[in-house]
Length: 374
Image 1 (cartoon, rainbow, N blue to C red):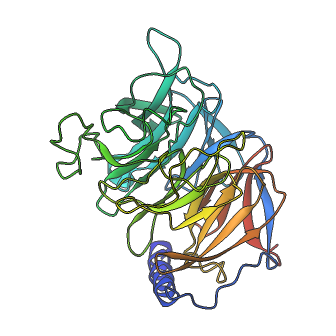
Image 2: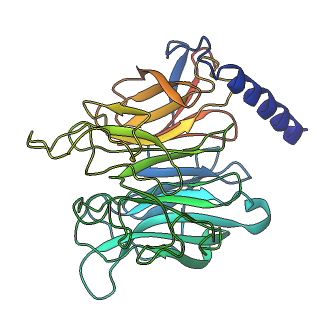
C-alpha cells in the first residue's frame, strides 16, 4: 500500500510540474512553513541521501560518514577510503545507485590524497553497505594530477534516466590550465557507466589527446547537480569568482566558457574575462551578481510545497538562505530568498517522505515542514 501511494503521488506531482511549465501561479513565500531540527550533531554536513529503510546517510567534510535513523540515532559508518581533509577538500557527496534495491551500490566523491607527494584530487568511488561498514569499495575515477591547492574540488554527482553517472570536478584553482584543456582533468563535467567504464557515445571518445570521460568543459566549480524530473536533463550550478555564479544545463561536448567568458571579476576587483557571451559557447540560464556562493540544489516535486512545486531550490553559502528559482520551461523566470539567516547552506535534498531537508554548516540538518504541523 505504501509503495502504491508513492507511485500515485509521483504521477500526480509530475502532472503538476508539466502544467506549470509555462510559469503557472507559483510564488515565493516561506510563510506557510517552518524549519525544524533533525540533528545538530553533524557540524559540517556536505551530502545527503536515503536508504530504503528510511535511514539517512550524511557525509561530513572532515571525513566521517553518518547513518541517521528517523528517530535521530547517529551511527558512524566504517570502511571509508583515505581522505585528504584540507581547504575545501574532504568527504563530499553521496548518492545511491538507481538500482540500489538490487545492486546495493552507493557512490562517494572525496578528496583522494596523493600517494607519494603532498596534495590530492577529486575521486569517485562506489561501495556496498553491509551493516555499518562499506565493503567491496572500488575507485571509479581519480582526477590527475594531484594538486596542493585546497580549492575547487566540485564533486556533485547525479544519475540520468538511463543510469549513467555524471559528476563534477572543479578547476582546482588553476583556471588558466585546466578548464579549456581536454587533456587535463578539472573544470569539467564527466559521464561514466555505473561500473566506471566510459560510455562509447561520450562526446570526446576517440578524439586524440582528450580524456574520454569528459562530457562538457569550461566550468569553474560546480557544487550543485540535479536531474530534471520531467525532461531528464542534468542541471548544475557553479561558483563564479566575484560575481557570476551560474545555472547551466549540461550538454554533450559543450564549452561553458570559463575563464574566457564570465559575468564575474577577480576578487581584487580587476577584470579578466574576454566577454560575457560569445557564439559557440553555452551561456548560463541564470547568473548571480553579486555571488551567492551556491551549494546544493533540488527540484521540488512534493505536494507538501504547492507554491514551489515544479521549481528549483538552491542553497547559499555566502548569505545563509535558500534561493527559490522559478522556472518557465528550461528558462529561469524569477528568483527570491527563502529562510534567510539560517547559516551556510551546503546541501538541499527532497527526501523519499516528500519533505525538504537542508544541510547547514554549524546547525546540522533541518527539515522544512508546514507551519501548523505538530
